[in-house]
Image 1 (spheres, rainbow, N blue to C red):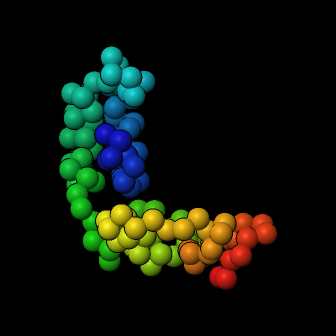
Image 2: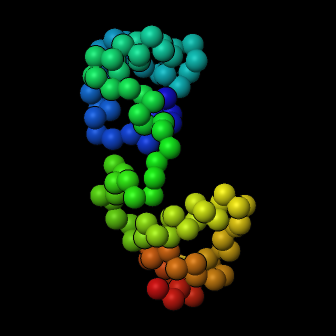
Length: 111
Ligand code: SF4
């Protein structure tokens, strides 16, 4: 469920509304989590949770692409590829990695 909501889009609001109407709350606590109610909510909303957990391609338009904090998609893609190779990006307080976001005060940003 965390994967679904972390990677989901605005259509999930209907699922949440339906789940709450079925009594879902405090779902982070195992003793309150009602998978059956959530399954029903997804079904009634016409959504499949597997859709949100699938692997994504880099050229796919993502629900959060409308959020612009300055960090470029190219930077995120490069970081993802580096992570797959266990390559760590140096702390940008010491050397700018060129992410595109605002710099730290007193930093050595070259953007
Ligand atoms: S110094 Fe600024 S632009 Fe450079 S990587 Fe850090 S946050 Fe991004």
